[in-house]
Image (cartoon, rainbow, N blue to C red; front, side, top):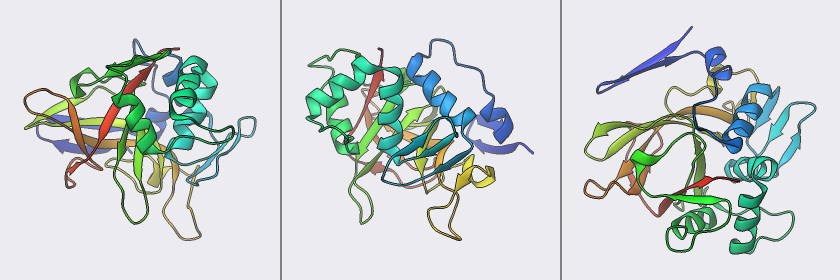
Length: 232
């Protein structure tokens, strides 16, 4: 059964099966191809801070930056090497969301091999990574992979479909109806790799990223946020 929502002029509908079998967007690169492969081929996924992946078994257990980092290592080695070098990441570790955010924010002035800076929400496309620094009692931020074309809703708000690994679903999220998504603990909500719709907030004058909404109707969070496009 397709799941629908209406927000302003925007109408979106898909079923989990349709989402899993979606075609590769035109212009999307190898990184997005890897992300799509993980989502389509996985047999089990769970949100956890320790990255444990068994490609042969279709098992993908990781958190948001574990997901992003693993996909980069698999598909964009030059981009991953730049992140490791600039952020000073030790072997066996991944950057935190704030470190990814700082890395992306610096790309405009200091370009890095394997990356392109993306400053405006309107310029985001499938395969771009967005990360933000927002400390709460349980998190220090989050990272997502853009999965669709951003749609402008007015007053600086854009809605967009994203891939991420999380235990908190977005709007029209795939995880609640996906038997592959396992809860973090018994009786909990399905978690892990999935896709859903969230809001990104742009400066009304410049169009630059300035904040996010976990879902389009949630409260706006203004915090350090930036995006990057892996190219190789």
